[in-house]
View 1 (tube, rainbow, N blue to C red):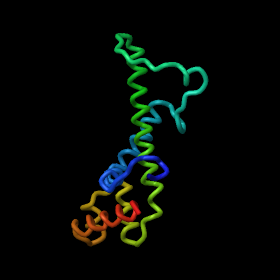
View 2 (spheres, rainbow, N blue to C red):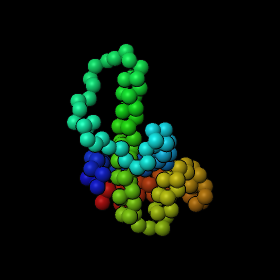
View 3 (cartoon, rainbow, N blue to C red):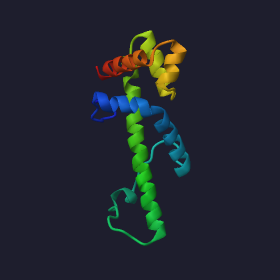
View 4 (tube, rainbow, N blue to C red):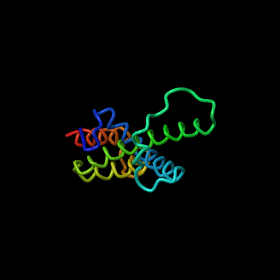
Length: 136
């Protein structure tokens, strides 16, 4: 496991790389919506209070529950982003580094292939190499 403490295999890492750009944008947007500067944590008495389990008809409680789910989703995205970031330095090779950078910037495989003058299959093979290096 990486420093993010996620159980990662080749398939999940491949998905994290593919989803990196939109997850990063989602994290920025969710933080802005919730007014979060960095990380969220509960301190003091709030941290020790039990969390509600049942359904309620109170709109304020429902909104609190919705925001709690959003914060949980935010933390999941952050963990996945950190997992990719911790593994970036493992990637060697000029082509691999460039393809990874563009993928993390949200560029499509087709776009990357066109710019690099490579076939889609060749770019896909480079991505497989990137994932293998990041798993190592």
